[in-house]
Image (cartoon, rainbow, N blue to C red; front, side):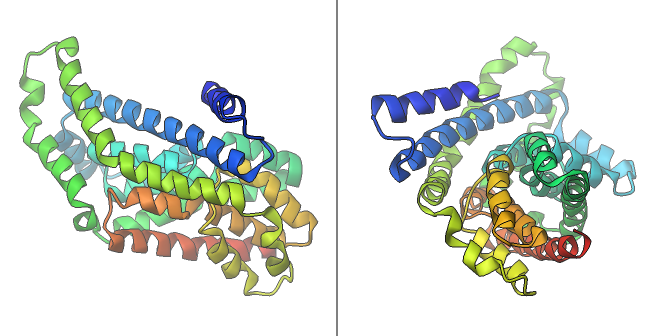
Length: 324
């Protein structure tokens, strides 16, 4: 989908700036340019589309539907499955998270998507299948979806809406106050300028956080060597699973990018469950993601979210080591 952006980043960094693809600086800057452009484009498009949805489906109507119709937890499974089929890393998932919250989707359901989206995608599944076989792939996919479903349900029970940032609360208040918008007889094309302005305002509100978060991720991507962690995670002791999760948090990569690294880990003697826990923490719990989420969540809410997901990933790592 974003091959043209990757080609542009390669042309800019390796061609115009003449930095080698094998250098740490070149790798980091290429990553920064590509992810910055990708996330800002995604953010604008998604918020713009959610603005169109909100124009014809007021936030209160969506909330009323979800409250009136008991889906018996399936809404969390649907959101988690949707997250699994969207090819986004953790930072790319944040724009969708903003769009979901803006659209009035319950916070727990939104968390179900946010948890699963970076953990599982079709590219990583194909790579996983070729490297580790059918059994490991099925366990990986199933656990990723289950992690999002149960994690979203659990976080939804905490009633965490008051812990959203003031910026998000103002957006929700403005949407609720705009509930009469549908009654307006404006045509679709007459509404486009207002929707565009709203999307642009949201992009401007988060752009600094996007740049900071991706800069951190780019530095990690370019300067942290792959073999740095292998010597600490290969013993197979019980503590290697939580250690793998803890040391993975400063890292940043998408699932497709980290799978080859996991293959190296396993070849070097790291247990597969420990390696998968490292992968899940890398793509689902990263400092860049936390930096981006700071715009939409309070620090307390980020801590609760990271804490729940961390416990689930550690549990999954132990389970993988038992089953694989």
